[in-house]
Image 1 (cartoon, rainbow, N blue to C red):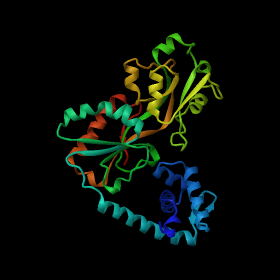
Image 2 (cartoon, rainbow, N blue to C red):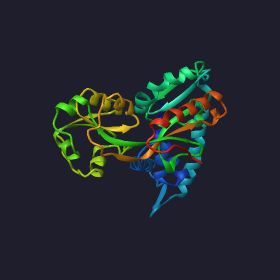
Image 3 (cartoon, helix red, strand yellow):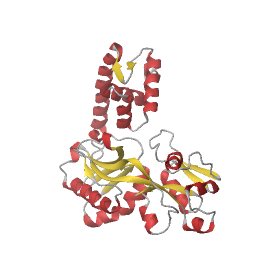
Image 4 (cartoon, rainbow, N blue to C red):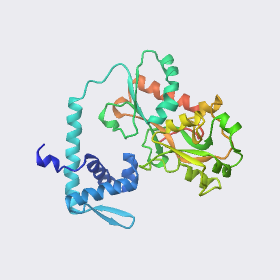
Length: 313
């Protein structure tokens, strides 16, 4: 590899810098890229250290590009567009007929995939390709038709369809509730193993035991044991197997509660400040199969929605 290429900054750092420079806000840029504000700030600082020049002026409640940062931002924005255009030029032809749906691993496995046979029955001629990945997908690139994202209401773009909000409550297998230590109130969780979803990037800081316990009168509770998992659907599989108590995300696990594969031992719940949104890619807005899929999502979400659905205007 040429030594100049070896000195190139990370593409993630450059994308983070481009977004921060365009939004002039680490917070808004982080939400756009689905990373935490602190992670994005560290990326920009690492980029500044690598270049040996400050790119931003950090003021109280304000962010501004330095002279060098503004010039670098113009160049990087143009180069990133050229890279995206080059990728578009060589990518494989889009599969037809059908549509590609991007969403998170947990939403795909726990909510979307179990319901897809219903859509196939309603639209037998339409193939659906599910791309399950927790990384952000750029809808403007053209390889995804619909994205289902977990967003704050304030960051949902115009035209996005709100499917439902999310409620959090402890859940466990019926056998554990019936034959294990008592589970009558939140303080009883101290006698149980808690199942944790590890979230090193801080994408869902409210969907963790510390936040739920603090909101339900048991801050600082120490459980009898803990098991940690890198994917949320693994947490639920462990709960189904009776390994401990999980923090259930409604409506992702609503079907398990309806079939009594999981039970909620007490009614305390905690409402998360975000919701699931369906976003249609610009290139796919006029395709009838895409409109049919989004309408199907609306219908599927209406019965289970813990919060009123709405379209962002």
